[in-house]
Image 1 (cartoon, rainbow over the protein chains, first blue to last red):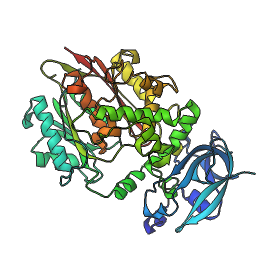
Image 2: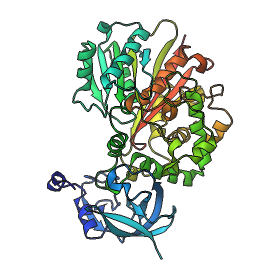
Image 3: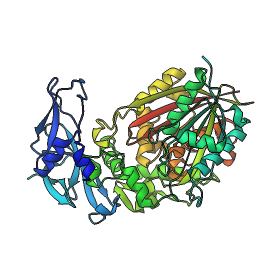
Length: 128
Length: 380
């Protein structure tokens, strides 16, 4: 992360800090109780601005999966090929992360964490 | 309210065009459009320019107009990813309909291939992903589309062979256009055997990175002879990032199309030519099925039946699309409309289809994030 980004606090700061603490955080609307995917200023569903951050169990199901053969930058060249997934967490939020090779859509997974360069990233592993 | 027509088009070839920058390419396409429309510079009173990743200028329209010697009363750049070209055409139509402008030049170009390294281009494009949630994972544009493809294929029962049919169709079409980037013959087996990029997407499921430019002129006065009238337009913007795409069956494409059809007073059954955005094979397949030009899971079957071929009931991207004509950014998404103009006016040469009357055009930007639909009708 560059100096500028750490000085300018991201709307997703609770999520980013959660990663370093090895937990997944997501937003929920206190007005309609709907869970949000990504970080928002207002509820995606009812527009209320009363969003609070919660900690997820880290468990969920694979919603989508790809295997990246061509890394977009030198920083990821050494990892290729790597598996990326979008997981629907059991609380309802969707999240992109790395995953154990071979996971399929519908598989039950749980979040683990790894360091790549100076960033903490999520790797979803099969449950059980 | 005034009517708006496409009065002329111009383009450069697509491919590797060494030694020519974004403005050089834009100028060549704009010259072609002026000639095609039979207009002189002084008659252009509106200019819309698409962004260029190799020339991220604060005011590209002014930069271009100064060099090209235009003095419009309305001009600015626009950015809506791959939907920019169609969005500019939609706005040009509004400017003409309202009486604000008489002749709007819509132009975009970019030396996206030769003006930077391929790595640099791929990295720039990857930034359409979420800076906190997606990009840090080493995700790329093909990865976003690969994820989306996996989900759509799962829900709609699509196979890799189904996707490959679209790559072959676009290549066959591109082989009939003298300005295409990719013209080597390919088969379904070749697509399936090509290098994995972001599975399920392989190299031949992805469009190339090209240099090139396209230009169109939208006018209150139609061209002499065949008139190419803009009869409907619509947009939809449900999300920016792949992670936020709630339902692969409802990306916004259908909503944008519905608005365009309502305005035109037409239905999908009236359409006899298609220009549909095809950054990846999955893009094209999903758009056709969501908009309703094929039942869910059946678009590839329509390719196999020949329905989308030059001689079929619903010719599709006869220039070869982004997948084979090429993709240089905004101009890549304008090529579909340029081809509609040429088909309507009988200028498509060996690609000419039999007298199309109503064309549907669709472009999407991001990861099915910004959608623009246009409907053009031929009169005379």
